[in-house]
Length: 484
Ligand code: NAD
Image (cartoon, rainbow, N blue to C red; front, top):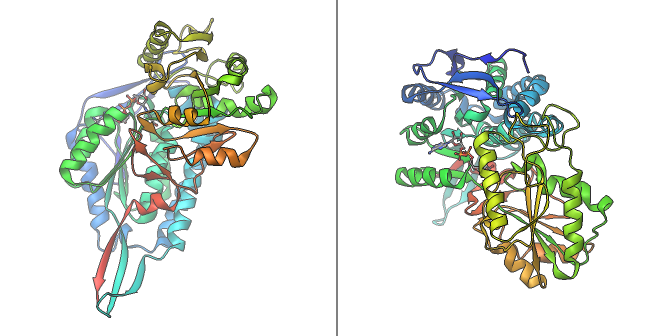
């Protein structure tokens, strides 16, 4: 990160940096110290109107981006990916200082993944056929076309800001859409780097626009009459609000919302610390718990309950908590004071509800300045309690006992959410059989690592639609049938 605070004065609209109409600004704080590390404009409605108008013009251009062959778009996307990669180190630091993501993780994932997604979706679009001739029901022929859906509003959260933006714009661009991105106010500084990379890549003006702002900016974007699709990641409450507006406007929407996924430890699991510890950390605690797919609701068989509590507790206590920019750090601070207060209130509420604290529960000594919470384990948790049902978004794991496999499946599915899950067993086939009974978009066996090539369907309060895989590309396309 630069040593002086970033004082950014413009918005990226129509392929150039422009002065905002709005005079309101957003301040960004370091999660490690609480100090202000930057400021950017907060776009008002007229700024949003300029951005959407630029995206609309670019999409409607009769010889423009949406009409190009996929290979022509690939050339621009490849330059964009390279420009992002050239900024990867600064990107990683910028993300980590804002949201507390340990730097080892931002270097491995959030600063690198966007370019991989761009390459993946560009190749998919190039290899697919956008037009297919079919025999028609009347004996004639029908030309079936896949067409880009249009102007996409991409509203991005703060937890993996770069990946979450790319999950939207990569398939959208590959399909031929134009995009207006609204980053989260907590993590707007990395979006400046994305805009710089886009400017370097030489997109036609208006294909990519990046406007910083808060909730009202998001509402202005979602409600804009010229937006054709909304793609959102964030809280279930905001997702519902966006879904309601999109329903009224009959506008397609992809909503990637919260999760509260179960980790089912089967009675044949290998609970040896050396075997399980390295897999437990990313599946239960990744990004300080600020990850939607975490399987932080541990379900343990009564026959091995004490062993499970012991190993999860030891994993939590072994984690190195510290400044997010320290390469040794495994758990950094939370994104904001508001988020820390929320997590602390949930822990206090859980203990009042009868949960037993076996690790953490407070603030780590010597880390008073930032928004730190100790890795925390709560045992004897009732699956119906708030701590087992609410998405926490902090380094907090719960443990609930179960009687037999059927009971474990019932508890795992007894959730408003349906995003992910993990199953821990020494018999893969048994794990797969249990996985098939879970009402979730993804399940990991003996670990959890999201796979870009396969779809994640968001179920129940986890959202609507699909991310990853060719299925996500299809969600930025619509069909047109021409009867011949
Ligand atoms: P949020 O849903 O309020 O914000 C996410 C994005 O939506 C931000 O860009 C925000 O500015 C924008 N936004 C907020 N209100 C909006 C509205 N009415 N219309 C349009 N856009 C709007 O999430 P948050 O406040 O940053 O985090 C709160 C909780 O959400 C977290 O504690 C966590 O549980 C959950 N969350 C989940 C994910 C995820 O990946 N599923 C990511 C971030 C947060």
